[in-house]
Image 1: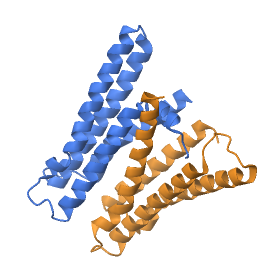
Image 2: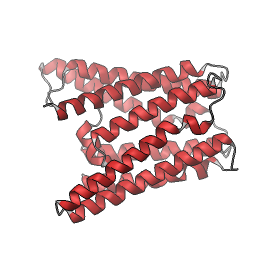
Image 3: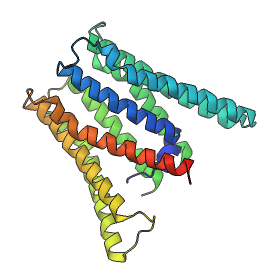
Image 4: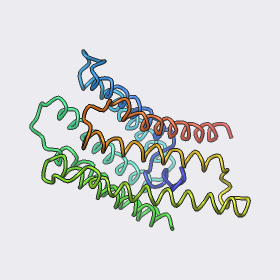
Length: 135
Length: 130
């Protein structure tokens, strides 16, 4: 309501399909996380719970590369390069955040929450630059 | 409001909330969880006012500038209420009642996510089969 879907697509630089995929992944993850926390999934580790998010990141990276190749073949070099790098940086940051979050839940590293969330701050800065650039 | 203003406002709210959340989780601040969520309350109030204003204009004129039906507006209103309820339940769980079941806390978030999946799927379907 506050934003139309087209505005979000332009701002985030994601296609509707990628967005739908991410939403499904987050929904599955949240269900699995709650089940794990409530001791329904006793044997599953936190890595298992995070699988939907990692799969979604992998698929989104694949689509990003495909879009880059297609745009490059259509001679849209500048737009293709900019879109590819901004999307890849966001995807890497989100992946690192999820990785750190999973390790935090597994108590593998003595990470603080500020260290864990730091990739999200980078994503937020990129979002701000994108907003100013697109609109 | 122009799109840029809305985008920058949303960005600022997200940044402020993330900073407050990290401070609280790291134990640097011992504030009440309802205070940590103030940026999100502000965003929700503005969102509800925005939807309410658009519904009022629609009822008054009998049509919408962006050709959005009243049913979709009601759906957005319900989604915002789900978001608000989820935030309240998270605050209650962290601040007052640690024994509150996560199923109850996550329920509104799941409903919200399912609505968002439905909305994006509908748009995707319209794009593929115009």
